[in-house]
Image (cartoon, rainbow, N blue to C red; front, side, top):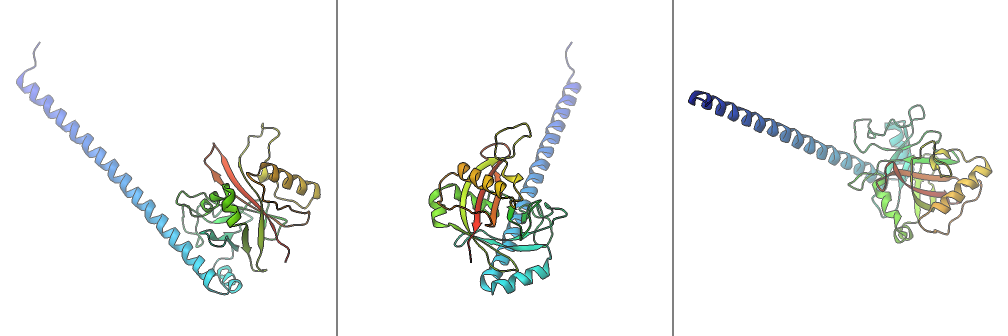
Length: 254
């Protein structure tokens, strides 16, 4: 049975309508994606500028005085982490009741994709083992600045980490650098570095340092003795699912 001329026009009209609806829908999706992308860029730029401003305050002023000022602005401020002649220079936050509070918040507590560096659960600014976490941002900010340590020549050029707080300045020598992951509970014979938050027990201290040296990508020649304060910096790594990149250092004697 043939299709009448009227029905043909009607079908063509429906086809055009459907085409325009698809076109408009695609346009809306594209516009929404573009707005989200530009918003993300704007937020990233704002976060980068804010952190750069804070870093300039620390670099230009008398360090301890500036740290006291930052602590007055935000009582969660625990100290300043930096590596000389690199872009790694950020405030470190400490909220023991909610350790990951600054995972996606800036220094002023506003929403921030890059968040802040923060001291992890079970650790503290003055503990035997300070464990600091931060995002591995693709633009190289935050702990994205740690990733070059995967190469030995970068460590040779930047062997020291500074972590200064209101009690004074602290310099740490890098012991080891390694890739790791968040392991499943069923996994056996693995090094769960993130479980060693308390190193007050000598045997546990020695066990941690020994496993750090074994896992390290290269030998730094730096060892730690029981009683040394240990600093561990941890960030995500994309070499595998739930991957991590870790830098461990010991505080130099004053």
